[in-house]
Image (cartoon, rainbow, N blue to C red; front, side, top):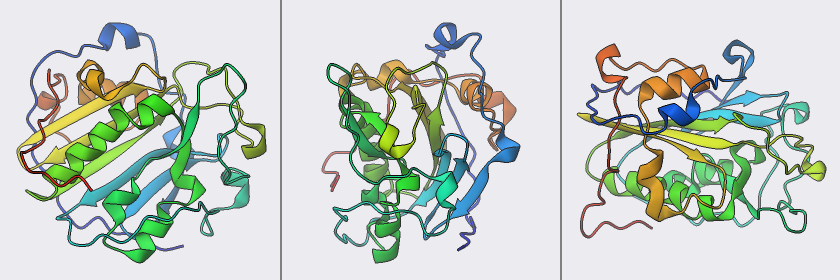
Length: 254
């Protein structure tokens, strides 16, 4: 097992606005017991695995200035650092039942943010970092959050954490992977020196890039539904932005 030390300090945060999804989420609590998670560290990121679900439920990394552009791997791999009993049993694409939502092999930590290291970019394609993501969401709202990180990391260092949630029973299962439950939502927090932004995005094909702002939530909401506690001043946890950060002009998102 390799160990990744988070040496960068967490930043002070500022947020504003109202938590638009509070009414939708009222009554929902995380079904993850955080004390039983397996923490696994890689070159540049960390994952927390729920072995019962064969899924990572949290990821964490720092995004610094983009200084390299190693090619993303076309293949996916089993994770040599995690027991096979704790990860999916296939690296193949998700074969969705006829008439159901099409799912991509969606990254938690995107390969594009690990492209300064040949090792890290390969590790981002370990199946432990992959989950079924609705195609429109993966290529839409979720991708837009990744592009925001890609743009702002060239301005200042960013701290990112996020993960998968199981707030609803999802109909689709993937037997070859031994996934009997798939995430209903994905969440993400981006923290920079003087600001924070967070989303809770449903894992469905309605979550296109144009509606990302609908999924802005407070950090307090994410603490409640994930079961995790984030190192953010209490007074800043109860509010949410009303608009996602605009990408700076001329940003290279590749």
